[in-house]
Amino acid sequence: MRIEHHAFQPADLVAGHLALDLANTVTARDTQPRDWLDDYDALLRWARQSGHYARADLAKLEELANAEPAKAATALNRCKSLREALCAILYALAQDTPPAADDLATLDKARLAASSAARLVARKGRLLAEWSVERSGPDLIAHVVTAHAIDLLKDAQLDRLRICDGHDCGWVFIDSSKNGRRRWCDMATCGNVAKARRHQQRTSAAR
Ligand SMILES: [Zn+2]
Image (cartoon, rainbow, N blue to C red; front, side, top):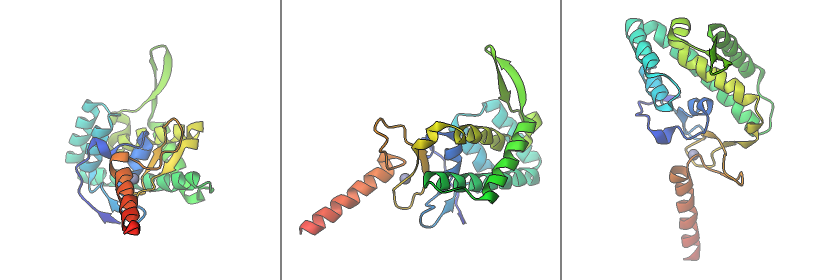
């Protein structure tokens, strides 16, 4: 897979779910996939954009990565294998086929690691699992994504899991539209390109 430097923007995180947004850090899965996580710093930038992580935690992770780059690189690789397994499972489920055993095993391993790093804390009258840099180290981002992924995969919301119809995209997303017929990850990008292409085909057919 080609690795590409990328400046993450809000338009890159449109899946409607953290775990799907991680899967979408590879783009053009339907043609020539490009991986936007070129280093641990890219993962940090993605995490910042997601809004799911405390600034203070991300700052600590950055320090950690600078102090121990080899550990950060290994954590990034673990995060990428989680991402690929997760994406394969999401594709299978979106296409109504059973996920591969290898992918389930990878996700299960990530689930166990995330769960053993979690701590139960009382917040506003209920208990929550919480992750910290102290316990998760450079795997903090992956641990939080894993917890979100497991919640989603057990949820009925999964009926609304879709793969974008756009060319050079392959992104996954949760269709939260009223009629449940959203076809594109983002109307402003894939949707418009598809519309323009259809329009062009119509006008050239008319000619
Ligand atoms: Zn798309």
